[in-house]
Amino acid sequence: MKYFIYTRKSTDSEERQILSIEAQITELKEFAKKENLEVVDCFTEAKTAKKPGREKFEQMLKLIEKGEANGILSWHADRLARNSVDGGKIIYLLDTGKLQSLKFPTLWFENTPQGKFMLSIAFGQSKYYIDNLSENVKRGIRQKLRNGVCPNKAPIGYLNEPRKRSIEVDPKTARLVRKAFQLFATGKYTFVDIDKFFFDQGIKNSTNKYLRMDKIRNMLRSSFYYGVFDFAGETYQGSHKPIISKTLFDKCQEVIKRKSKTHINHKDEFWFLGLSKCKECISAITAEKHFKFYPKTRGKVRYDYYRCGKKHGYCSQKYVSGGEFEKQIREILFHYSLHELNAQRMLNWLDADEINE
Image 1 (spheres, rainbow, N blue to C red):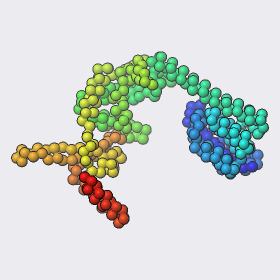
Image 2 (cartoon, rainbow, N blue to C red):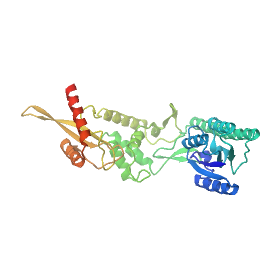
Image 3 (cartoon, rainbow, N blue to C red):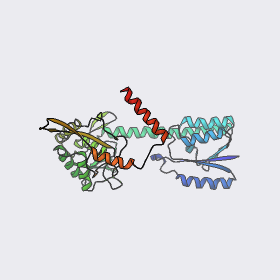
Image 4 (cartoon, rainbow, N blue to C red):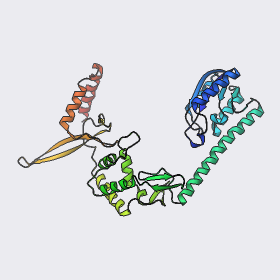
């Protein structure tokens, strides 16, 4: 009889006490050696079994249906299934005879009607545990909301206090957050400026770099800082201490609204925008047009400028003119060429495009 080893461990809190995947593999190989079992392959998965659709699990079952193995060796029944769909698949394969044996170091299984009944109970217990845990979590969240405590991770400027099960002001960063709101409310500072302000003050991401730009935007748009928060589409009055006033928050929203009206119109024809990224921070390149009026000729001339979009935080790169940008692109493309056949196809496509115009 040939066996597949199947190991699984997710990052869910209820599985923190389960052996690591490496430990499971070691234990199962020792068990296989002790029981003189032939192992032909090993499948490992770092996914929850709450819902069906695990790739490695499905792959293993398909190979069993093809006859490449007729037994499964796993640490416990709950490693195979924590939902009724996957549990039903295992029992069905046992019924059809394509799966003839299940081995677990932690429990005994025999491929008999009584054994399959006990296995279905083990799968049912795993599902009940998950369902009950989910309901307990939901009940805990509802109680937190009633107490005015946001169930999410505390934002910059606050700390989660596990002993009190509350969110408290972080004395180290709260004043910097307040200062950031005050600076932005003047209308003289951009999101990038605020990001640089935090970086200079020592507030960085986990890799010791600038915070992501979307984190800065979300912070300046968050009502949490004046004492109100949204959760699951509902608004709640928080029990945490506000860092800023509602008046200061509203001023920042007015600035954001004004800035949003000055977005670049990307319908204008700018070359290479979809093909180029900033070398320093990997953000996409964006462009804008400016016009200069010449009184003597009474003419208006358009000038294009390209710059880094700075979507990933602070970037030191400056604007470049359209001519300079084209020069840089040409220097890069100089080292590449199209195959003769592809070049002719491109020329034909351009000719057809001109005729259609």
